[in-house]
Length: 319
Image 1 (cartoon, one colour):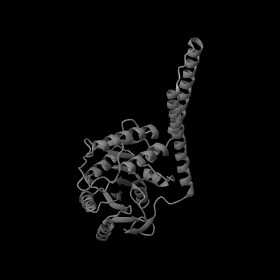
Image 2: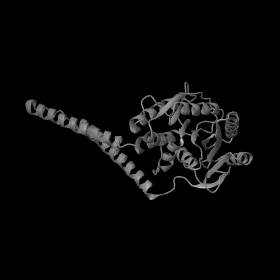
Image 3: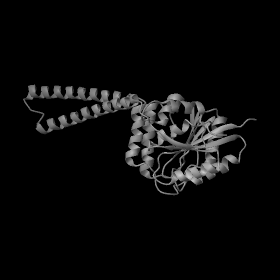
């Protein structure tokens, strides 16, 4: 029986101390089975440490390890999608470079995807080895993704996932400037499921995601795949107008019947500041939508490949 092919795609950034462990474990796990051939596509997102030299050494020792070196830092989403363009597998496994995601669990997720005839399997952790702030942020991000993208109820999203090739191809076709993988996936298929897997504590350093980067990542899902924010703003505006009209009626009635002045200088200023804030927020949100459309229309590259290792002219790698 012909073996199916698996492409393991990993965005690499500040992981000089962990990436060799990741590859060693992938090699041990996937060489120990006879169902799948594998390749690892490691995308160096212009990392400031010495990880690119490590990647080149790994690629020189094993032709199944492909390296893509980006000319500038483009963000995890863009880096991973760039790695997808070089993937030749029937199935794609997304793994991080920090050694928190066991390769054995990736194989188990892949087996589960085939057995249940699924399109995507997301890892779900019984107890994620992250800070309380990160866990709360993940839950909030998960809720907004469900609100904006039509994510099936009960599904928890995660960067550790397995997908079929056709889903990956839809991701590479996305033309927007700010990709959000989950939005693309749920716009492509609803045949997804979670699988409970192990999650290791971080061995070295800390997460590359600062608060600012997490907010930017969240905004990509919040604004890129739905006009729901605009609709919510419009509804909020309608509610404020209705309440203002009702308040004006109350003031008019009290003035006519009792001759009292119900609204003073302070309440007037507070109301003006509140409405001004709503207007500025609405304009800013509309401007963000228009700005993203403009950047997408310019045709500027989201990521640029500077050089590669173990990849042929057709971009599918040497066999």
